[in-house]
Image (cartoon, rainbow, N blue to C red; front, side, top):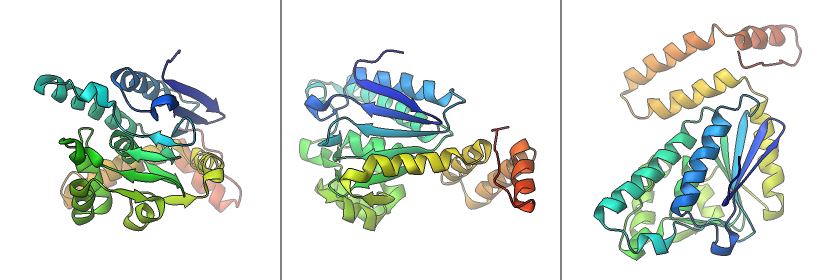
Length: 260
């Protein structure tokens, strides 16, 4: 599968997806979003890939935002379709059923911050900066930034960041819960790959159901979320991986999960 704006590599059970437009700080234009959709679906359906890393090419940016040249000429109908296209792709990332780690190597602004938030976990270089500066352009986030940000950091912090449009350092992002870990920039990819390999060794079905239980459970009432959890627990209890995991524990050995 060939791409013009992405790099897709596989390292054992880990897929590494790189936004490759360093000349424009990896800005997301329509062709890149479309390629991202293809790549995400490819990784989703590749049984050999159990965890994914998303990062940006170069040292300056993860993704510095959307392509302003495209945004500047959009009319209402086009703008809505643009937002829906990005939301669809980011929903695919959030619900891939495999852990997706955002390795944030620089600026993650606007659509870049939204991309990072769609990932399962976020590891930031200590030099990274994150933010939703759309208000400064007279617009609002369009790739579900208002929704995911509030769910990650709470209403008050989300409104602070959305209304001010200010950028936050990696340290502040960690403090408010926008990222999960901060590491020295030189160690970002090695730490992200270590984490991805660790998660890739977990039982794939249980991992998929944990992600589904959290993602879906947040959108419904608590009693319905509990019912969903119980249903998924019942399903996972029928898997070979459950029998392997419990047997390995009792036999004091390392489990060998097959994803069945």
